[in-house]
Length: 158
Image (cartoon, rainbow, N blue to C red; front, side, top):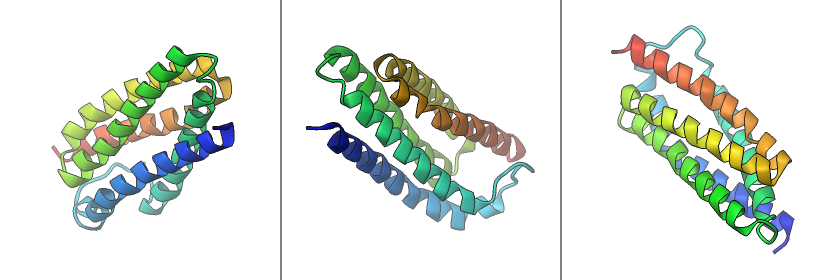
């Protein structure tokens, strides 16, 4: 399998996870989310879909680039992709906790774990493919912002 196919598979996987979690998010954004207090720096709702779509594409490209090194660094690649899959699952779980269960506190705990897993994935990716690692930096930055936003929402609505 060549690099382009691996990248395409990575992007499709990430977008599929994003789409599935967006179903829960959409329901919450239309019902519960408008009723809670949000901080002044809360972005408009329309910004989230394009940002997350871009981030999922970048994540998929990163995973594909790392996966392409499987022959040269088999064990390191398997471990890195294992961390990648864990953080991808945690990413989806956050939507269910925050929007599905309407539980910002539980979502805050989970997003802290997600951030740690993204950071660990970044550290593993950067050793295998520098570009793959760098492609996770916007994701790490956005999740950092999302964690601050999540904490603020929890605090304002406790």
